[in-house]
Structures are given as C-alpha cells and as structure tokens.
Amino acid sequence: MTNTSALSAQAGVSSGVATRIRYGVLAAIFLITTLNYADRATLSVTGPAMRTEFGFGAVQMGYMFSAFSWAYVLAQVPGGWLLDRFGPRRVYACSIFAWSLFTLLQAATGWGSAVASGVGAVTTLFVLRFAVGLAESPAFPANAKLVASWFPTVERGTASAIFNSAQYFAAMAFTPLMAAITHWFGWRMVYVSMGAVGIVFALLWVRFMRSPSRHPSVNRAELQHIADGGGLIDMGEAAPDAPVQSRTMKQGRTFFYLKRLLANRMLLGVYIGQFSINVLTYFFLTWFPVYLVQQRHMSILKAGFMASLPALCGFVGGVLGGLLSDSLLRAGWSLTAARKLPIIAGMLLSVSLILCNYVDSEWLVVGLMALAFFGKGVGSLGWAVVADTAPREVVGLAGSIFNMFGNTAGIVTPIVIGYIVDTTGSFNLALVFVGLNALVTVVAYTVVVGKIRRIEFQDAPA
Image 1 (cartoon, rainbow, N blue to C red):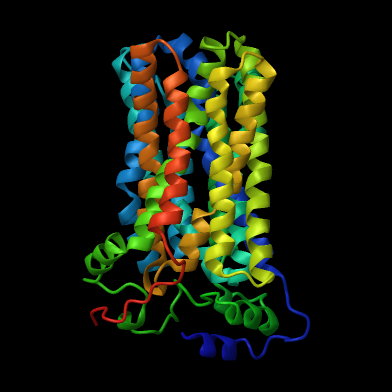
Image 2 (image 1 turned 45 degrees about the vertical axis):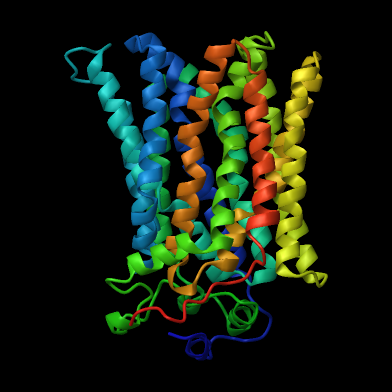
C-alpha cells in the first residue's frame, strides 16, 4: 500500500482537527523500553541475595552478566530481518512475550537442582539470560521502525530521544522498586512480577498496535501530517491480500541489503559513533558503582544513591537533545546540522569524566560524572539518525546492524576496564579509555558520516 492509497483508505475517517494517536504510540514504546531495561537489570539487583543463597563467585557472576550481551549482539541481524519481513506489530509482541517469559522462569533457578549452590544454578541463569538477550534483540530496531512510520522528520528526534531515555528512567524507577521487592518478598518475586507484567504488555501490544495507515483511530488529517513530513505510514504492514512480492522484505534480498548497508560510509560512521557512545553507557551500568566504592571509598549504600544522579541527568539530557534537534529543524537548519550539533556537543561534554582523575571531592566527582552522562543523553540521537537515513525497505535491518555495533560495547567495555583495573590497580586509565571513546564519536560524526540523508537503493534486485 502506497502513501497515496493509505491516505485514500482513511477518507472515511473525519479529517477535521488532526488526531494525536502517534503520541499514544510513543508512550507505549517508552513504557515497553523501560520494561526492557528493567528486565536487563534484574540480576544486578537480585545478584547479592542470589550469591548468598547459591554461593556464586565473582567470575561466575561475570559470565552470567555477559550472557545477555552475547546473545543480544548475535541476534541483531536476524531480529532486523524478522521485523522487515513480518512487521513490528507481530514481531515486537512475540519479543515482549518471550523475554518476559524467560525473565519469569529465572524465578525457578535452583529448584530441582541436585546441587543448589553449584553448576545447576549457574547454568540455568546463564541459559535464561542468554534467552532474554535473544528475545530482546528486535526491540530497539522495532522502536526505530515505529518512529520512522509514525512521526514526520521534524518530530522524529524528540520521539527517538524519548524512547531512548527510557533506559535512564528504568534505572531511576525500577532499581529501587526491585530492591524493595527483594528485601520484603525475596529475589524470586522480582522475576515473577517483572515477567507477569511483560506478558500483559505483550497481549495489550498485539491488541492495540497498528501502523498509521491501518490504525482505526487515526484520522486523515493526522495521517496527512505524518506522510507529508516524511513518515513511512504503511511500513511493515502490507495489505493482507497483497502478493508476497510487494511486501517490504523479499526472500533472497537480505544479503544484498546487508552488504550495501555495511559498505555505506555514512552509516558506518553512525555505527562507529554508536559503539563509542555505548562505551559510556556500559561503564555506568557496570563499573561506575564499583569505582565509587573501590577508588572513592564510598559505602555501598552511598554509592547506590550517588549512582542514581547521573541516570537522572542522562534522562534530562536525552529529552533535551531530541527537543533541541527538532527545534533546529523547525527553525530551518538542515537535517545534517540539526542532528550533528547535539551529538557533537553532548559527546564533548562527556569527555569531562576524565577530570575526575584530578579532583578529590566526592560531590565534584559525582557532579562531573553527572555532567558526562547528561552530555551522553544529549548526544544519543543515533536512533533518530537511523530513522532518518535507513532505506525504506530495510529500516529494521539497518537498525539491527546499528544496535549490533552499539551493544558490542557491552561485551568489550567491562572486559577492557577489568583488565585496566587489574593491571594498574586504579580506574584512572579506565576513565581515559571511556572519555576517549566520546571523542571517537565526535570524529565519526564530523569526519566519516558526512551529509545525513535517506539512502535509496535504486539497483535493488527484483
């Protein structure tokens, strides 16, 4: 269904004041992405209680933490193919249901195991967290695909920044909640409650989500607004009676698009930038509390409170970055300038964390870290760039490659920092490593990316 035919199909719907259904879609994406990140963090919250019960060692915990990232990275391209083949409505619903089920099943860790504190519990957790990583792999590419479909270009930066900021909101809202559940009801109840909530979300998603061209509550005025602004209103949901050849992803074309996407200089620069941005993300998710306790000699309770402040600043920065980018577009700036300025400025702010090596005050250290995470939030517009640039046929696949590059940092960063700390006995070089990656992002967007524009593959095979 083309944009023209999609608009014609909505002719019977009132075309007076435009509806605002796209904001409800964005709210749904934000809530699901918050749940996504909360489910990733379950082990970090319940880990101490589980270590007490099962006697996990630090190395065993490290392997279990890594299981998610390995699976998540490996499944990105297949997840993108599924999105382009079957559309975000069905694939996302299956993804939410599957990762929630695997989260819930982690509550059974140790049950029926002959060795409750040994290999059985470790193996169970590793396998289930690996499965969660596989199931979550389509989530962020689906977010990008939905934003490209539901939002015109001048609103896309804000929409992308809002769903991306859910990672910070999850840290603020769910970490204390899961800690309280663990304290009052035991660690197993964390997995039961989080899994049950996710299953309900999956059922609601498949019931209410549609693309703009097929959503019963969208009127013609809103559909026209989205389409005129560059929204891909019929993406991912071909008409039920459409022949297979007319659907978004045709069989046998995946490798053609994969090679072309990886060979594109602009996208390669975006992928490199996302890897380096996520080095900062995974530093804060993994080693930051350890840094506060080990090098800054804070208590665990105090470190936990202090670690929440950068998350708050990242959330604020993420929303402001999207608003700034879209306001620049509305003011007449080019797409290239409007997207690059917040990214470059934000990443330059993130370099400030290196200054922590030269100060002693606890609050100054946390302040510099909060400034760095605020900058990281401002500069996290990569998903908006993907929605702006990916070929219309393979937005899901392009988003998956982007996410694969970005989350490789989840494997590399903890290991590199671990070796640095083990070798030097200090986090000083680790902070330099993280700060330099912020500069890599600046170089990628200023030197490699060039002009930001949507890619068209004119020579795609039939």
